[in-house]
Image (tube, rainbow, N blue to C red):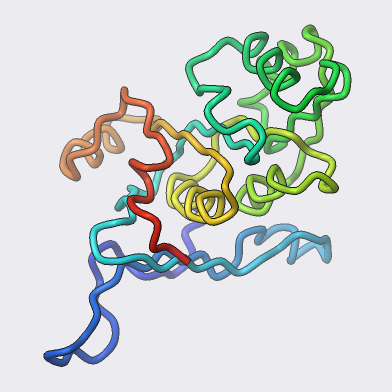
Length: 209
């Protein structure tokens, strides 16, 4: 999403031999580019590897996302109203609504959602950059965040889903094209922009690292 040089979808790397193992690789050499440039924290390098055909080939556009840790797995969905999401989360985590912390990218596109969260009474923790690390944080009790919601890069969504699958968390995403060219790209890649993809749609099977 930040126009950095990267591997293209379908690019073959490595030397092929008769006994070669075919895998999918998703990589973000720097999740949190601005944070690193500003001397801030939480910039990470991320790579996920899985058997061939297991990682979604996500187009380079936006994705609506929701991520939670193991205790809330299966309790929330991307298409739920904010009020219901936070209520279900508070029950799953055995916390009061006022103790629930929602994290999301600090972007104007999230202003309306921020207001909804404030009306419900939950806490908000905004971050400037790097939503893979923020999604992973939902799996750790000492991270200070309980759920990630919002819109970020689709390739980063696949990486986050891979990490949460390894950690026992949950993730859902829905592609969010912003113009006709992006819609056309999704169609050409066989991607439905209207469906919510569960973690198994993004990362198939259990052989992912």
